[in-house]
Image 1 (cartoon, helix red, strand yellow):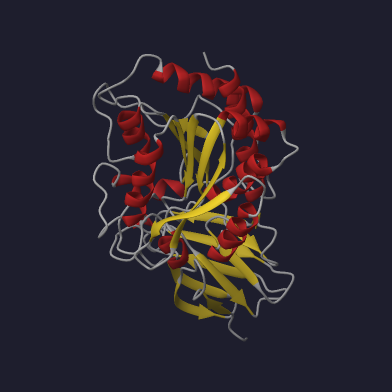
Image 2: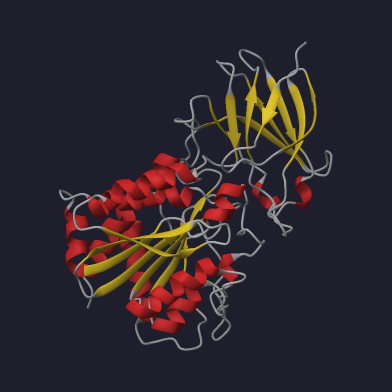
Length: 378
């Protein structure tokens, strides 16, 4: 029997082939460069038409978030357009923790990933498309360690300074799918919430803050193994030029509202983490965030406030994280939006789990909620 072939030497690819036998393979995930983080995978299987594949990704007990594997289902695509979910099982005791993916492709090729990938080529298409829209300007905030641009899209003419940024953790690709939906709302001349936000706010959008990690197939770090969301207190050109570039620009504009978009490996819900615990809390700052969460929860059943992260005690917030740093530095209403890698347990989808489409729809809903929040601002 001819062995299947497995490749990952492409944009955001990540897998190591330990062995293949017929339609079975034993695999491992490559760690982020200069880091112990690993969880993101993305690879192609060929020679697979009509054959029952059994793909075992091993050694996952030492992955970044082992709690992310139970009840998780792998994403797959056979045309690189539609991403569904396939039969997946987890055994913590097999070969250091093994995720087994089973799938029978209709064609010769199938792609598998931790979540639907968002390539750097698609990123550039998104930037090019949005930059041509009326009222939108583009600027390059800085350059990554691998020489890639840090793209920013600016729009609007209002006094409220709003910053939206995503993919500090490059493997959290749902964050840039979210950006597609948010930008569709913001740049659509017929969308009343987009028009409202452009009228009331000046909006700065950074769809991908870690392009190096994105292209390299990292889960959580940039080209030198640095977690960018632990660099906001003292970013440097040597370790975190991406954060340095965006924070310097924020210093120029100020920040009234900020949304940092992420994905969570283990929690099967959409939720927001705030800035409780910053040393210099201003009157009404937390209440303004709670008001936004209440609006978003009313506007979409995909968002909830029952599940999420523990809140930091007073004065104990980690100011190296962007949401806390921006709330402390500017008095901003800042937030971290988290989406699941698994499914949304409140509204599960057997075919796709949490998906690019759901992420983009949530992006539009978040902008509509922001518009309502701005209009009802005391």
